[in-house]
Amino acid sequence: MNDALHIVCPHCQTTNRVRSEQLASAPDCGHCHRPLFEAHSVALDEAAFDKHVARNQIPVLVDFWAPWCGPCLQMAPGFEQAAARLEPHVRLAKVDTEAVPALARRFDIRSIPTLALFRGGREVARQAGAMGASDIVRWVQAKSAVAGT
Ligand code: ZN
Image: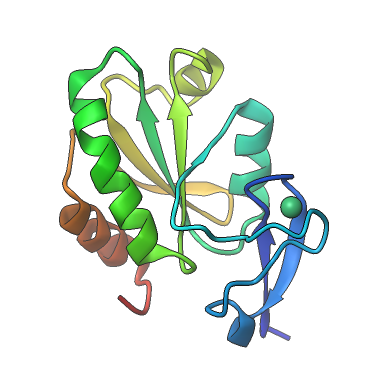
């Protein structure tokens, strides 16, 4: 059956089974009972990154950034606006490359900000450089053929 999706909770990292028709009606986590989608990106360390990328059955868009990077900070509000528009069809996440250098090394991140789109545990697209909310949404939809918005 293909009528349920695995969604990793952004708060407790538990994998939830969410029926497709419930996805858009603000589902809560079965473990911690907090909302699975809050129109916000989720900050990931290495362990959380692996769970979200491997287990989510929706695409995961990751912003590789750093606190000292001006363009990254400029893009941050637009990234949150994109989260509000792309959820619950896409999970938006942020990786602080200074706090989690192992992930920056693993994915060979050469410049920041870099956006990388993951689907089914694999990276399917990458784009370096800051983008506004509308460009982020368009890019993700073009790369993942996401319905809606
Ligand atoms: Zn939870």
